[in-house]
Length: 123
Image (cartoon, rainbow, N blue to C red; front, side):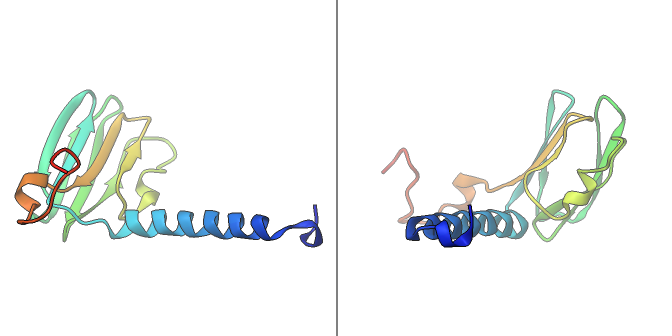
């Protein structure tokens, strides 16, 4: 297929696909929250996203070290062989499959809710 064979809807679909991908990437990078939830080795841990620091959790392969800074999170070191999770940078969610670690930034919905805002259940 060449560019001459593309129709208007093909261009619209390609642009929509690109904008959706860009939006999801930017949204994941810029996501800030009030808490960091870590699932590691079948256990769940919760940290304040407002408390900057370096933390570690134990997975099946060893310790995964992550950093919380200004409401964002990144993995700084992991015992996994390819270090793909380290290369994800400041993102949410972060996943280290070999070490069974998932880290996500979340908002505490009840503490963050302002008067007049509704959730899906109360609407």
